[in-house]
Length: 80
Length: 80
Image (cartoon, rainbow over all chains, first blue to last red; front, side, top):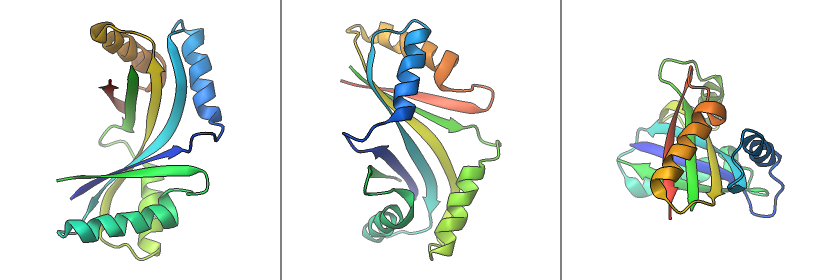
């Protein structure tokens, strides 16, 4: 099954990349944007048929490797 | 309205970050993953009530700044 993991900085953590994108958007004329945040999206195929097992495997991947849970939140999406 | 832009490398473009994540997942015991791709997710508020105008504005942001359309694809999601 196809897995999509979204990792983003927690609210309250300074997002310097988001600030840079916000500034760049303003400088090319888009002044109607606000609260720009930049995160990561990790997409992969998981060779596992049991959805509950897949969910627990991917949660472990996020906790151990994909996200820094001190400053980042993650969400997991299972696409059939 | 809230906008989510997902930017990912086109198929066929070498994704070295994805390869590194794939290797790291293997090394901590997850051998059931494949085709790992790492992309960016840009989330922001857009002060615009007209959905068609929002869509065209965000498309222009992607073409001009957020994505390198030579090597990257993007998708736009409008969350109310």
